[in-house]
Length: 58
Ligand SMILES: [Zn+2]
Image 1 (cartoon, rainbow, N blue to C red):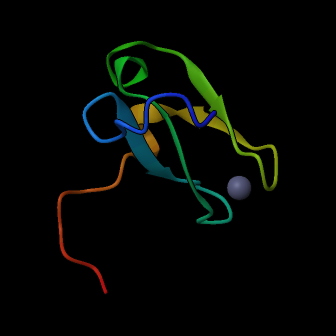
Image 2: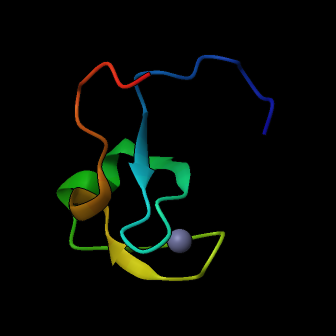
């Protein structure tokens, strides 16, 4: 981590479907049937299932 500092285009922010914890993964995973593992509660879910919508929450 800390290499580049060019975040934005290549990451996908997701919310855990179980604990709503927010974390990010590689954007490419959105198009794959790959399960993410929540770093907070270790729930596994598809990236597309937890992808944050483009909205202005808070
Ligand atoms: Zn979680």
